[in-house]
Image 1 (cartoon, one colour):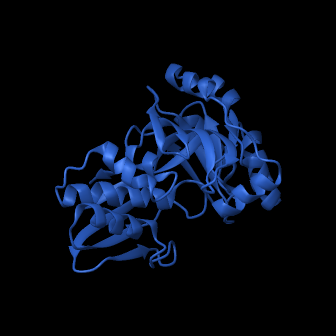
Image 2 (cartoon, rainbow, N blue to C red):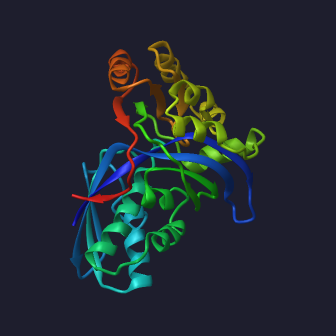
Image 3 (cartoon, rainbow, N blue to C red):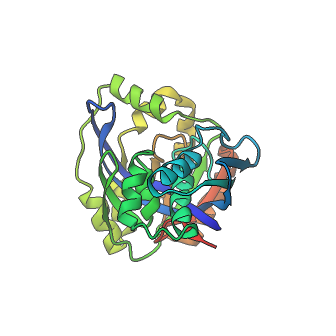
Length: 286
């Protein structure tokens, strides 16, 4: 079984205090977008994962898709599985690539083994793997609360167009959160303005409501990425925001042609530039 696993972006991310479990409370809006890894699952006597291109992600027990397969087997039974991942979502870029692959593994195994686990139960299983994995199981556009496990669907009637400015640098999520704490932390706030702008397809209002509390910490750790943000703004993006814990920048466009024009203007500023739009689904078989 082969599935496409969409990347995710965060038009809104506020971060609160670190809890006793070491995790931070968040209030976020997450959106699946049209940049996909492919994940192919096949029954096997053992658990294993291969990744292409070589070195794009680990192939040992730290691979989140492999961990997802083991977690699914522990709860639902079954033998091993062979996982083949073709990476297009960059690693450690703030786009949820590892979480997307894990989500696709859970959804795919549910179909491959005909276990008929509900979407809600899959999301609960996903919460044990990482904060973004429950959303990546669901896809579409959603508000995320708690440590990312409490999801509420948000209406998004028309596609939102983004330019992804992907840096050659990598930022560890853990390092960015540690720097966030060192700089004084923050508090969660309600994403009403972003949610309302998405529901009304009001891209100008959405631009003014973009927010990511981790941006300051990411810039503190990697000040050189600031030039990418400035380049997207100068090229005409309506708003620019850091993707997750970075270092990818998201430029918001009015429509597809606007996004294509901005992408062409900033090609020289990034290791890679992608034009994407929001999608209304999570992992899907192909």
